[in-house]
Image (cartoon, rainbow, N blue to C red):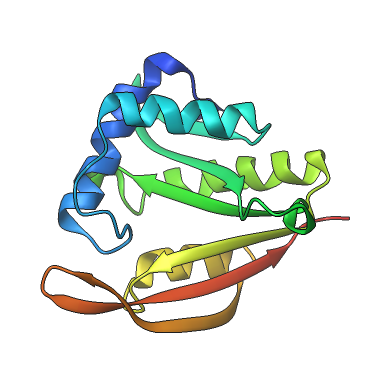
Amino acid sequence: MIIRACGPADLPRVQAIYAHHVLTGLGSFEEIPPSLDDMHARYERIIGGGYPFVVAERDGDIVGYAYASEYRPRSAYRFTCESSVYVAPLAQRGGAGRAAMLEVIAACERRGLRQMLAVIGDSANAASIGLHAALGFTPAGVFRNVGFKFGRWVDVVLMQRGLRQ
């Protein structure tokens, strides 16, 4: 598996992976998948802000991606970021998410960031919670019943990881 910087040509595959999660899972609270143009705008905002955006490639196919982004726009949050990671359905539990997140964490440490937050949809999302725990994230709280998707109320799990200082 190769972990490398995401480029604009990778965005159709990134968009397809994310669309699957929007339509079938609770990891994202979006209910309508963003268009490819929307994904380009998100990518430009992330990269333009100096944050890492990487893809996991196996046998020439992008099987997952991860990035960090601004947590909140107020200046006091400038040393804190939020992580995101998504893996294609057939590649789940194959190490793509972990490998991509390790690169994102390292890039954020090189940038001098101090805290990385994970905002995980669904308190029953054992795969994402487990991945983050294995990467050194610790529980920071739960927002109960803050999203409504697929006809039910959904929690948000908050996890936090200190970055090397």
